[in-house]
Image 1 (cartoon, helix red, strand yellow):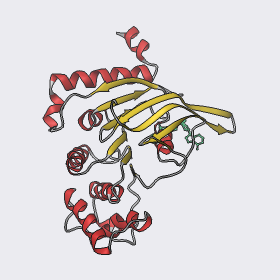
Image 2 (cartoon, helix red, strand yellow):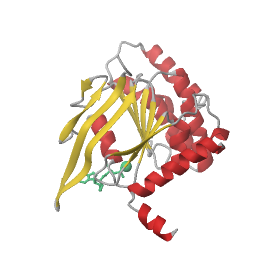
Image 3 (cartoon, helix red, strand yellow):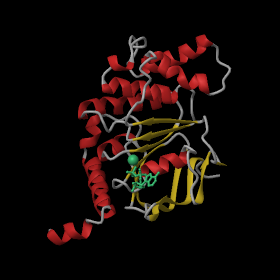
Length: 267
Ligand SMILES: Nc1ncnc2c1ncn2[C@@H]1O[C@H](COP(=O)(O)OP(=O)(O)O)[C@@H](O)[C@H]1O
Ligand SMILES: [Mg+2]
């Protein structure tokens, strides 16, 4: 048997029905995400990236093709998927700890209250939020809220983590802190990640593989394997190898935006 895929997007085609007729968003999209790997998806704005996350989360069914998680066709939301978005949407009337505990109140499990708290506290300390568990969301910085949101997405030990531009609203340095925290989490916990981002450096720093989607209707236009090993530091982004990868991704994004030939003509 070859590589075991945790997420399989098989020939997915999808259109939204709008007042102006159908809007084709994804077209014969194929993506394989191996077990416990990290795949980043980049592509032009509006090409269908968030649509892809909704399909994987089981919030929508594709017109054609199928999404499989661990071999099983997804027809409804599953508790084996954790999600985090650009806006952390934490509940202000709950403490940070209580926010992180939320999925354990919803997803059936046999954990005692004590075990649940211990699980949440382990994650909070992994992301550097020990001592902030009794604070309210508004008492934390944006970066800290996003860290709490990652803990909440992982607290019930999902097999799959879906991230839709999770660090997009953070300043550059805070974002880099979160990248390191993402690596730290991966070291301690086993999960398969599909992350949408528009930050090419972020995609290279975090992922084992970067998939460039074409313009709408989106298909997988280019796949880049990031051969940087698992121990990564920010300096790794400034090597010749990384700069070449970033240049290739930039080029692919231009093609996806349909601007490549215009750029070449101007050169
Ligand atoms: N529920 C919807 N109904 C109609 N059109 C939608 C809906 N959701 C998204 N779209 C449109 O589908 C396209 C892809 O959206 P989305 O997946 O959010 O793109 P991305 O996340 O790549 O920016 C966009 O043109 C968007 O306006
Ligand atoms: Mg989006």
